Every structure is written in structure tokens, then in C-alpha cells.
Length: 259
Image (cartoon, rainbow, N blue to C red; front, side, top):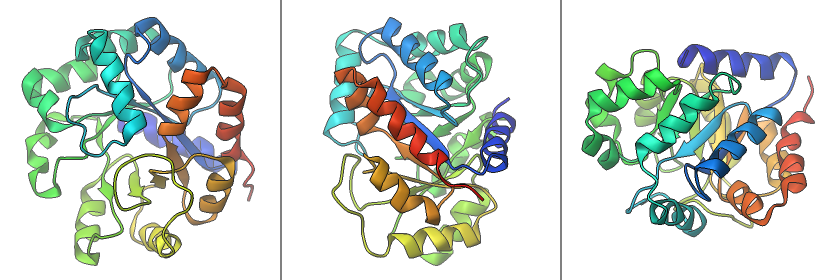
């Protein structure tokens, strides 16, 4: 489970000559039945892994689209246990790796050890925790067992800091493509491609680009420089509009790159 399932997923992608596509959805946005439907859809349409957000009242890294999704889930009374319960229910038929994106406060409120034990029980494969500094990783590391702590790295990180973060990370490296919060962008910083190339030289883990990616054009522009992409705001928007064919096209964009 956990790191092993993530490793296998990336190995399959590489063997097929493709790149990884990791969609983000907010747990409970639209209700728990809808959440279940989204997990099945993404699994059936070839997501490499699925990133699931935990609704939180102060999501500092999230742009407007993801913030609204979190608010909708909270307004429906969705709790961490509800999200984990759905994941446990679908696990027999959805073996795609599932990574939770959460902030530190919900983990602390739940109880770190209790939270991690529950996540392991339901089949969570890893965590992305945007407001957990590298220096504070020990808060969760002792409880991860076989689950991954996926490092977030940014354009403003120093070389020394990048090396330390990447060396201790697991699962994959999440390369933030922009300066600022999540959300769609018209273009990316000029230095991004060099940044991604540097990360791939430094890391034995797959390097995935995320934040601001919203079209097949964006995906094709970035794929030569990384091992895959993470797409959040656009996935939420397309699900909300019922534009599943457009979402399928976006997911297929990572499969056009062959060795």
C-alpha cells in the first residue's frame, strides 16, 4: 500500500511511455454520493493518482475555485470521517493511489496518531500538507508508516533547501509552477522549464508540475520538462459544469508523449 502503490502507478505510466495525470477533487463537494462518482470516474479514465482535498476554513494555498469547493463541502456538513468512509467503501473497486491534501490544523484537531491510523486503515497512499514546513516534518513523519509525505517545492526555494526537501520526500515531487495560490493561469514564468529540469536532475522521484494548469495546451507545453501534471481548479470546474468529455480530453493529454 501507500508508497508502493504510488511507485507501481508511476512505473506503469513510464512503461507505457506516457506521463502522469493527477486530478484534484475536494472531498464532499456536491455531496458524498457525488464524491463517490468522481472517484470512480477518475479511476476508470486512467488517473495515475487522485488528490483529495479536505475541506478547511482557511486554505492559504488555494485559489477561489478550490476555496468555493471547500465551502460547499463544509456547508453540507462534510467531515474528515465522511471523506475517509467513502474512500474505504470504494477501495475494493478503485485501486488508484489516493493522496490527501490537507492543512496542519485539521490533522491536529483530529489527533495526529488517530488520523494517520485511520488513513492507513482506509487505504490512503500519501499526503500533501502545504503549510507544514520542512523543518516541522517530524510532526507527522513518525506516524506515516508506508504512506508518503509528498514534498512541495517552489520557484523561490534555494538550491540547498531543494536538495534537503527532495532527499527526504516520498511518493513524488510536487513542483509549484507559479508564485501564489492555485487557480487557472494564462501563462507560466519563463524560468519554470529550467526549474523543472533542475528538479529532475536532483530527484530520484517523479517530478509533477501543478498549480495553474487548465488545458491540454498547458499540459503539452509542460510535459517535455516533467514527469506529469497535477490539475485541480479545472477538474473541479469541469465536474461542476458536467463537461466530462472535456475532462477526458484533458486527462488524455498526458498520453500523447511516447518514447
